[in-house]
Image (cartoon, rainbow, N blue to C red; front, side, top):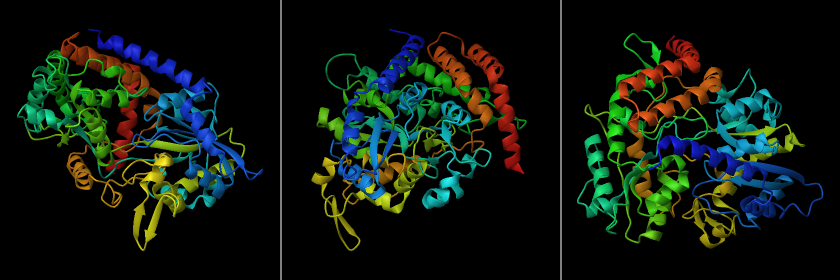
Length: 519
């Protein structure tokens, strides 16, 4: 079996190669289709402003058609000719690769905060939008009500879209049909989880007579990010915060210097030694992780539920007609503590680049996506085509909506992702969603165990040093759970190197911010 260290290196190399190909290749099918769709509605006007928008895809949305009528409608309303380039869901590395090659769009939606965005701001690639805010009332209102911290020296470089906050929809999803077959219940404790994963890996739950299943699968960390999927083990042993911790004297320390980390990593090492964790998770993107779940390779995975309940279960049943998913709160430890999803510090930033020939029009495009008018178009479509209205009741024409990339069961157009806020409550669930009650339940369960941060923001020092210290963390994390190094020795070496390579600077910044918040 390949070591996880080798897989991590391979994953990084493959991601980089694919990113460069995606950024440089001019014949990308999804981008080409979207670009073709952009011509409709604007072709009638010679004065239409060409606008290129690079964004990350929505996991639940369908591919865009060549003659997408929503894009045509946006073109008509704004007087633009939109060239839409969509990279796969979560593939922010492809956005970074495009910028590295000098291929700048007019408008971009990308992960934030990251080192890449900080570099783009410092180099003037992303431009402030302050001068356009009077023409962006929706954006202005959102920035001034809860997003003031995103300003850098008083300048806003875009609008930050955040998923979550007060609510969460993230937990471990299980093959409920496998649990039923093996006479097991959804696990509520760490001991229960171990027993379930052990059964998934050793008791042939798919019935093919082969030892070819794992208990838990997940995804590789994002570029420059630390491995966080397994954090549920640390929270179960009492790790109180998602970002940084406090020692007994009240000093800010990294998570791995808290006693709960050692207990949690001992548990994870046991899971790995007994081959209960997918050994190839470091090469899984989100789609790859889910495919292993659907294709009988793993019986559990971490995932976002709510609007994804029908999609995940439907995809499973397309392969296994009797497949059913189940979930519960993250497993608790000896003292009844547990959690998985953390209060977000970042999200998706939509901003304007220096290459935008008409920055005013680019600003109006961003405003439109967030405005009530834009939200109505991206959620419901065009009245009389995608839906009809009788008073407050909306009836969707799913056949027409499917032609224009709308997701099933009343969900939104692909352009809504990163722009239209999805409140994790019943008010957003379409009446046509067949799993309304289960979707709401997933949020209720997950939100009760959401983990807070010690400080609410990410500062410039942490941004500058995060990629280096996260790489150090990831390598020691893998070496420890793979048994390559003693746990105590590994934690001690991790602490020393992490602090030497920028960690102490981060801790000073976090301490200063924490002390300000205490006043």
